[in-house]
Image (cartoon, rainbow, N blue to C red; front, side, top):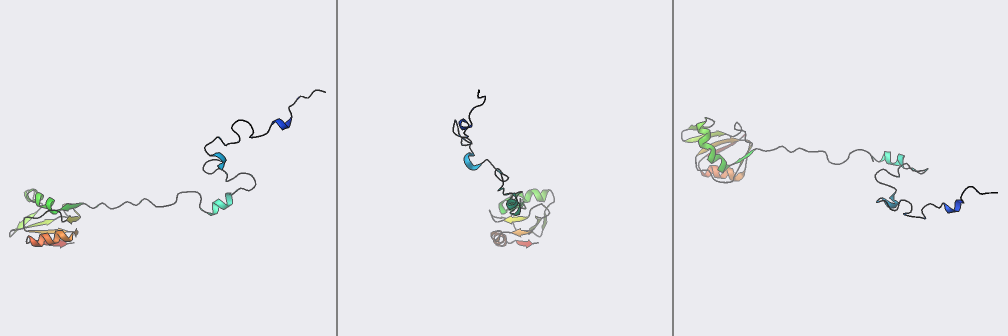
Length: 142
């Protein structure tokens, strides 16, 4: 009688060449990502579903409100332009500026003011208020 097939003892898995999945980057982990969650009888699917494994978690995208600010130096430089375009008024030697109408939200204290001004703005730095009062002006917060 002639044998037509090889012996089973010659077909051992993982004994020749690279071995069983050890040559992959994932190695003996079983794969990347969700690999191993549904393998064989001891699968973990129901355990994973209960722990919010799927989907996005963490911080939501928070957009910060941009504040359009101007410094005292910027105000002092732009006063002639605003007076020329009638965006600022001059009454009894005092220049009246409404920075909210000009599109500014905050007044910063960098630089110095050389004129007597009355400035109307939503927010202002403490140093800006002090410098305006020192120059003989007034600051109105709205």
